[in-house]
Length: 121
Image (cartoon, rainbow, N blue to C red; front, side, top):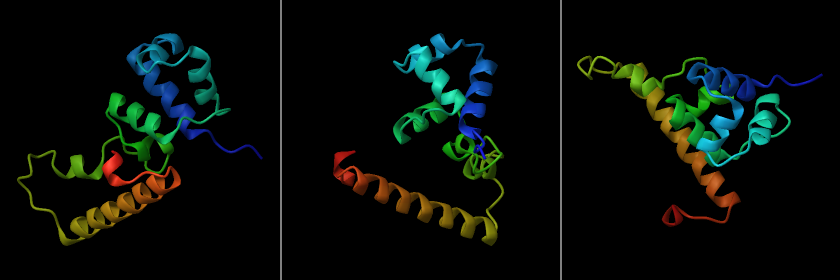
């Protein structure tokens, strides 16, 4: 059974919304249209740094690109859309703290796997 290619599907959709061909989109990141095609088809996966660059470019979260959430905005930006006038609830604070904890753990594992430290960033 073939796994669903959420990353590729979302990249293709976001690229289309900007009106870019694969070649034009790839050029922004120094990639070929062949590389973009492989990402969109799910035959190759971009590295974590590139996924982050894609997310930043499209102003979405990496979790959205990877299919972990269906909302394009982060919970933090949603929480502060009203300019931070409404204080966070205890549930929201707990959720954000858990997200930050998970981010830090993931970052630590990512750095360790590459033989890097925080100082290398």
